[in-house]
Length: 183
Image (cartoon, rainbow, N blue to C red):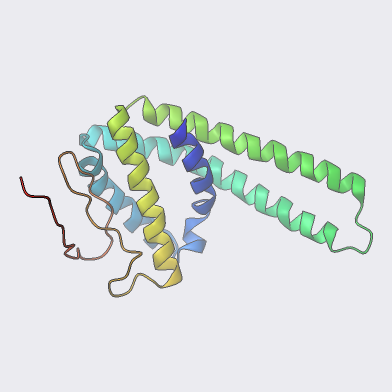
């Protein structure tokens, strides 16, 4: 449930990644390859499981894109209506109801995707997947904002320890100082 709710919000950020995060198919192709190579080690799963996760994502992506496009269009329409000197209350009421319906449909879509993904993963792998996806979003946002340059806080590294998760790194790895208590 937590994975679904978190990713439902995140899915809006990824609704149109080719436009938002620079580049077209080239970015998407590179991004998919990064995920294809990093997902297995990050989650502790084999390549067939990675392929299944990517297939689930590919199946839901066009539906999510369509939903996000519709939601953005509704928001633009609402802004147009509200900019009028006397906004038409009946039309706004109907539009707000439609926006709510679409938001619930988006959550339902995300929940179905989440259910398919979690059926493949243990709870630990689900948690790693959630952390991996959140760090991908953070990385993409830092690239979009230009913070992805040299060093910086927005840059994910490797979370270590037994069963640690390899966070996505789209740039060469940076050494991270770690202090451990004496044993």
